[in-house]
Image (cartoon, rainbow, N blue to C red; front, top):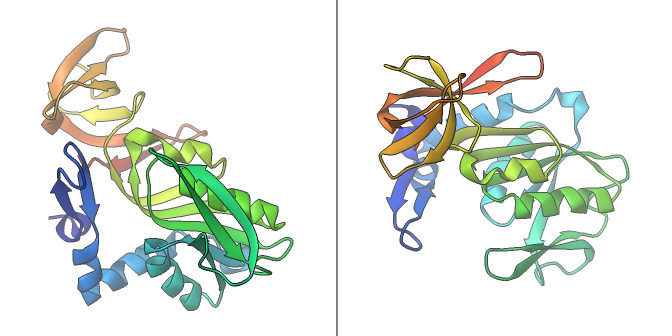
Length: 236
């Protein structure tokens, strides 16, 4: 079994029916697993001299950003919920599915020209991550990348950020994803849409479509600007 499949638990129909909740508590409870994820995240960071601080979202972002900042002798900026800081430097409000939320950063936490990593445990719609990008810019800093343990690909939150985004574990698909599949007339196809929990619609180069079972997916293929193909493990 894959390391992350073993330690990230999927809870179906939580917090509401139809949702698959990705529970990281088993990963955090195992010392070896927690150490491994910090090392995996650390490998994705830029060279030491290319960045200065990490900004992390309350509260699970703190869990991963704090050891990364300490390990690299870098500063940690806490993006806290409204009303938690005695001296607020900047605040940003963003939309939730129902309503709004506000996050704030401490006064003087980010200096002009600071190169900052945006960090959270998970990126979904990208609202809180985009708010952190905006906070960094308000303070005169430079957001240089987003780093997340988990990404829910179907929600395409990375598009809101306008900076490079790296995620260690990816779940789901979004329209237009290139898939490598088995037992089909072409090995590389485009994902069109989800049919149900077992099947998806795909399209071939000639424009024709077909419905296949998800178990036919080998991997998701990310096409870089230079044409290089990067393979991402498919997780449902």
